[in-house]
Amino acid sequence: MTTFVDRVELHVAAGNGGHGCASVHREKFKPLGGPDGGNGGRGGDVILTVDQSVTTLLEYHHSPHRKATNGKPGEGGNRSGKEGEDLVLAVPDGTVVLDKQGNVLADLVGEGTSFVAAQGGRGGLGNAALASARRKAPGFALLGEPGDAGDIVLELKTVADVALVGYPSAGKSSLISVMSAAKPKIADYPFTTLVPNLGVVTAGATVYTVADVPGLIPGASQGKGLGLEFLRHVERCSVLVHVLDTATLESDRDPVSDLDVIEEELRNYGGGLEKRPRLVVLNKIDVPDGRDLAEMVRPDLEARGYRVFEVSAVARTGLKELSFALAELVAGHRARKPKDEATRIVIRPKAVDDAGFTVTQEEDGLFRVRGEKPERWVRQTDFNNDEAVGFLADRLNRLGVESELMKAGARVGDGVAIGPEDNAVVFDWEPTVTAGAEMLGRRGEDHRFEAPRPAAQRRRDRQAERDDAAQEFEDFEPF
Image (cartoon, rainbow, N blue to C red; front, side, top):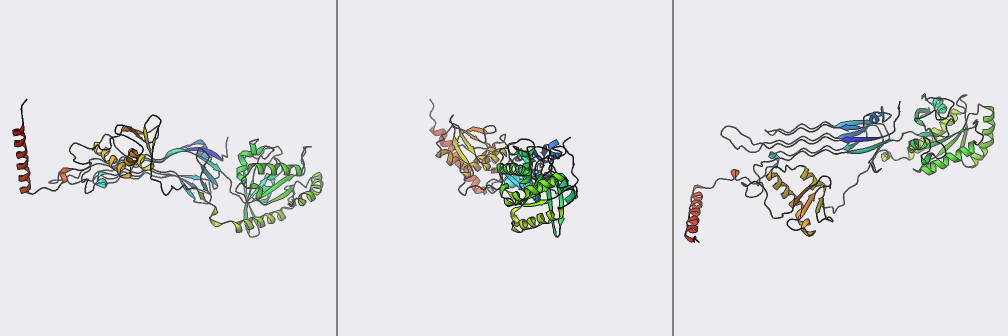
């Protein structure tokens, strides 16, 4: 049974915005009291938040589909719909959020750090919010915007100060068990450790964490064995400790060659691991042959510039010197590290000259409009309502879409698509057409709310209409 998961693909969907309401206030002696349709509620967001009590992504491995609640529609009487509830997902400290292409979206480090993985859709405006001096009684409302939906990848990179690296069965788990209160599984066969183990060590006034990184063997950086799955857990560690087995029974291995192999894998993996400060621990000196081998290879390792410690996890010798040496390196790294370096959220701002949309002509002659605003406005339009379609046309014209279509060479009757290929609204372009109901003189105007004309003006208008009709009768010539 899986007990530790450090990489999952999560399918997240934010809540949809509620539809706006088209309503007219009615009461006795006020049959047209004005628009009073409320706005739809915003859809809930999907938010990732660091929780120190969570140590694995196992929960999302079993339940990868997560969705926030939708916003409620608006109602008459200027009552706005209820907003959808945000869905907060707890993730371990050190979780990296990526898209399907592998681009980093956020690097979450530190208790309470959060990232909006999917944003809820906006609620549609009711006709009360759409009313203006020109459009006194809109007979339509905007639809709620769909929430963001898509796939993201969560990768856990263990947040620890010190990483113990080395061959399987080098004694890393035994070392972390005696230096801290951690109780990892320990046995005398390779690959006993299948998950990173964390332990807390106190040395004087310094408290730091130690991680046991399992599964490093030749070829680990290319995916051999378990190494590639856990090398990323070394990336955040400020100090590396090579744990070398001085009592190995394999004839083709020795501490120096083991060190060279692990160093080569760290260089191949990248991520700046080759620049981290490191120590060398010669473990298992409680074995007579192990102590002899440690004394033989120590001068060679020190000649390479390494600080070398001879320890025995079983006999608990040499551990105090090692723990204080690690505390010194950790304290130095913390003093040099910028305070605002922990959390990293990638922001990709728009260009200053970005018009908000693009117009391109495709091979079949179709003109395609892409942009956040035009596509959102299309999603919020009820195409069964002529007045709503006219309102959309006005918005697109004010944004400059009509002008750009003209510059691109579009002519009356050419096909225009707004949105991506798999979900676009396609229509024949008529730049001078007046959309809206027949009762509307201009798009969105309602003559029922115009100021009444004086009686004398009404009489003059009626007389002018009769004179025009009489003149048309006199000028009529039968065939």
